[in-house]
Image (cartoon, rainbow, N blue to C red; front, side, top):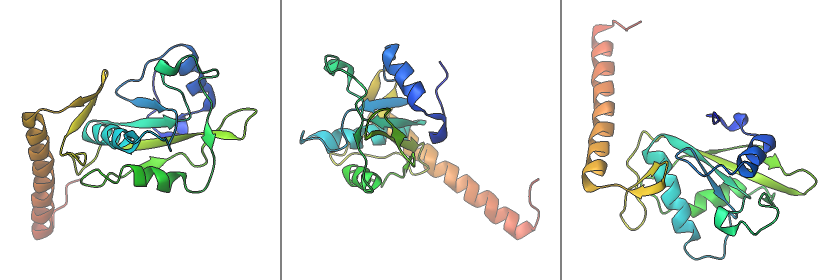
Length: 184
């Protein structure tokens, strides 16, 4: 199945199909039950996921869906309570990332049919400021196996590549400004 690359490409019907057909989380999306969990490690986990997406090709987090290890929960798609501060709460949860991670969210959230609950969908794009690290100083990447710790070499190469891309862009822009000749 082809996954959406934009927030507006996601719908309740698509998410329902992914869940009911048993799709596993991939390098492109992650399901989370709650935005506000009582688990003290919840914010750390969301920060790790966010860093992993930002350090690779980006991805989506869908809140309001029970993980497979909670498969006994019926229904698996249960949603979360809608309120005006959902995006702010998510931003506060991932505040431990350095540098800060930019994100976008589906507005309005996706309504769960016959319910007052919603699915809150967050998109984290590939970051121009990568690599991002968690508060414990670790760098994460997203693979089809989930979040994986980056090696020292991977984080250094990513940092070098990102810095070089900006430097080349700045040099080119500077040369174009000096010459007055813009590429077409």
